[in-house]
Image 1 (cartoon, rainbow, N blue to C red):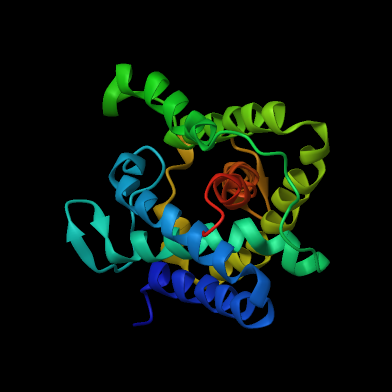
Image 2: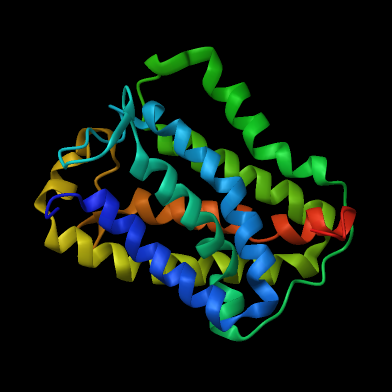
Length: 224
């Protein structure tokens, strides 16, 4: 089990998720909703190979270039990112203006419109497509929610990125196979603690996009 770094990463963030769930009863539905939504992003793992990385560690395969760890990691990441600021700052659910939940589909729509014409042959890191789509999607949501929504959303991105970076840096240092998996030729060359800056930018984009999703959907469907 020593080189199953992806599984250990999922377990580490799952443990943080569990702490959040235990400490914050008022955020439990948001944690579950956010993780249920992000779980399906695990099925996109194949499009990150080989431009983003070629895993050099052991993993539990579910199909060609798809791993069980992909689903577990993406699943816990949604709840972790969406609630990190609220847990760290002792905040409750965001009091957001009611908007139509369909606007939360802006990011996947942008991603598909930009990515699909090039298919899997686009000669750039897929993280730029997905991260950019989520950033644009967040801009759309803030535009609809109003400027007052910007602060909690951006602080969520900051909190999640800082906690994520602290945990990820431990695994980066401890597992050479994780470092060897990255396709550095497709990255900018900028790094924080030797970790490509794209890793931090992507998680920040993910967090700010995921931050208000539960509150938006709950505004339309109060039973969530």
